[in-house]
Image (cartoon, rainbow, N blue to C red; front, top):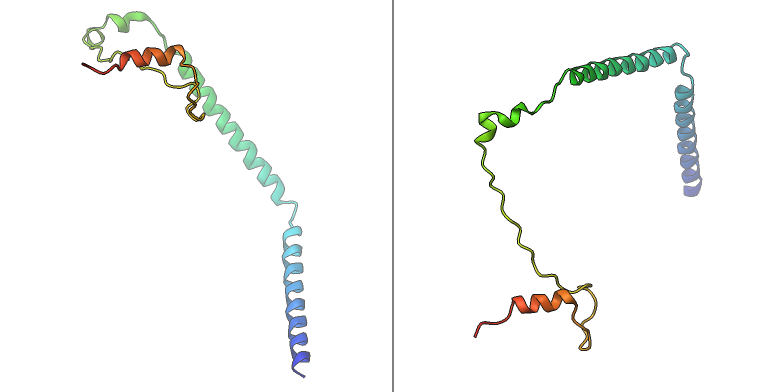
Length: 121
């Protein structure tokens, strides 16, 4: 008796779910054709607005004139160069993840770095 109630309840849930899915599918597929032209018009309008904005920006950039007078300006001449010279650092092993071996031959860069870091006596 209990098993019959369980089967009936599951059938009822299955039927209700099928009706809901069918309703959602019908609602989604039953769109009107009047909405489509509005969407196309809106998309075309935004493309025209973006195109007009791009043309205005390009025309503004065309009006810019570049000449060398900025380099003779006193404000530019008062600027100081605060850059720091980059000192070359010694290079390590060619492949730092390779296992260390006793017979590995030192490269030209590794012998140079060994000469740089000799202990003081």
